[in-house]
Length: 185
Image 1 (cartoon, one colour):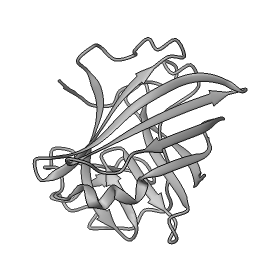
Image 2 (cartoon, rainbow, N blue to C red; image 1 turned 180 degrees about the vertical axis):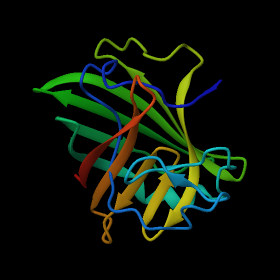
Image 3 (cartoon, helix red, strand yellow; image 1 turned 90 degrees about the vertical axis):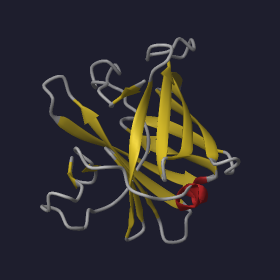
Image 4 (cartoon, rainbow, N blue to C red; image 1 turned 30 degrees about the horizontal axis):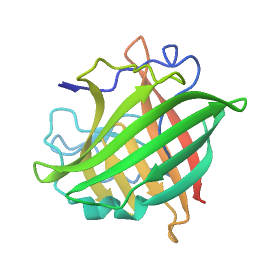
């Protein structure tokens, strides 16, 4: 079941989710057929179709990443691509204690890429319903960044550092941007 990201900061208990990046270029912003800004560093597909692309665009993510974001420590591990998919694990710690986990997949789907996320508390009780996950639709890549609806990966030129920007939907329907700064371990 497809459900757009709608988790509030309050629901996350003043912690948040996912990854990192840098400044947004004006790639046709303002044209009706192009993605629009959702936050300063993230894009929205709106009613547009997801972009075309292969998992090769994200294969650089493979490996072990550590860093910080949203007031806590983060750790993320990604497998190598196999059978059109990559698998990831994310752990968020606050004050040295696990606040939540994520299980992630990057999959080739319908000519593009889809990032799916399931969240779990420290006791492994899931946040989403059994058949639900948070889904990020692929927009594309430009100027070194990889964009999904509401999420932007921005690796450094040497691939050793990563900034991830995430659009967090608030209870009033607005979006607040969170970011993560990671480095390869």
